[in-house]
Image (tube, rainbow, N blue to C red; front, top):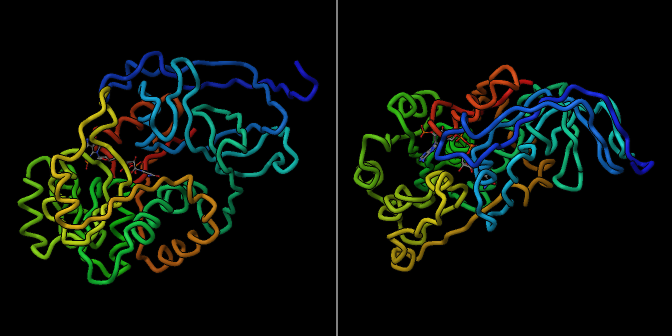
Amino acid sequence: MGKKMIEIDVNNRFWVMKKLPEGNDFENALEIKEESKLIIPEGCFATKNKYLSMDAGTRMYMTEREDSYQPPIPIGEKLMGTVLGEVIESNHPEYKKGDVLRSYGQWSDYSLVDPTSMYPSKVDTSNIDLVDYVGVYGANGWTAYVGVINTGRVKAGDTFVVSAAAGCTGLMAGQIAKIAGCKVIGIAGSDEKCNLICNDYGFDGAINYKTENISNKLKDLCPEGVNVYFDNVAGSTLDAVLENMANFGVIAVCGLLENYASKERLPGPYNYDLILMKRLRFEGFFSPDFYHREGEINPILEKWDNEGLLKLPIEITDGLENLVSAYSKLFIGSNTGKVVVKV
Ligand SMILES: NC(=O)c1ccc[n+]([C@@H]2O[C@H](COP(=O)([O-])OP(=O)(O)OC[C@H]3O[C@@H](n4cnc5c(N)ncnc54)[C@H](OP(=O)(O)O)[C@@H]3O)[C@@H](O)[C@H]2O)c1
């Protein structure tokens, strides 16, 4: 071992893929393993993890596709995601033992963090609960903000539609669009979720995509046309919304939930021609591109949070060993708001 490595003894459990998941069968695809040492190269540090953020986008790591914005994680290697934890050993001058950080680490008891791979940030828990740094004050909050304000460029009076509306990102996007003065319609997978987003989160209307025809219901709910669609799912939902876009509307492309489990590339929208007919703007956005804006965006989110305008339920699953049931919620739709594993 080079002399700049630091080796520490830890009992570390970590999750890997033993094979690629078929559809949403994570139970048979993921396994938990153990090791007794961590080797910390120069420029890195180790954290004891407290919370692991469960994110639907990480499903893209579990495919063979090389062309996504982040390459797949090979079979047998530690699965990764955003973690909240405390530095227990450091081989980096700026990160000290005891620092509490949000960083890009492993789905494990302890993470080895390379700060050059994704920006870690020290978090201040004097006014904000630690877990909220992967909720309102983390990548989902910034994604919702940027998607609505910067990519969607909403204006007061706009009609705004969001899919996966009762999930973490969608729930915040809908509330931010309400704050901006929009009429907000959410698309979600059950009547309970539809009632919840209207009754407790201020949405003006909701569509249960599992039981209702999205295109027809949008015609009823917004005959004026949709100005901004915050797209979390792509696929057939996107086609239904395209039919109802207003001229010069915007599709803010956040996620591809209908496609994540597919081995093949899916064809683009059937209604592609409507992009021209309605002079639409399509624009994708990806949270690591605006992590550096944390200092600008978090105070805005904090103000709304303090005013009671931005709420986010957090579902916490206890125990690293129960990670699969927590992660699966995102794909079977049994979560409302943010899903987190407490280590
Ligand atoms: N661009 C970025 O930087 C960025 C950052 C964060 C998140 N995202 C994207 O935001 C979306 C939401 O992610 P999240 O982590 O916040 O998860 P989430 O919304 O909390 O959970 C996912 C929800 O999506 C719905 N869903 C699952 N599969 C679906 C399908 N095939 N069709 C329609 N709805 C489906 C489920 O609710 P139902 O009951 O409604 O089906 C589920 O509760 C994902 O597409 C993710 O990739 C993008």
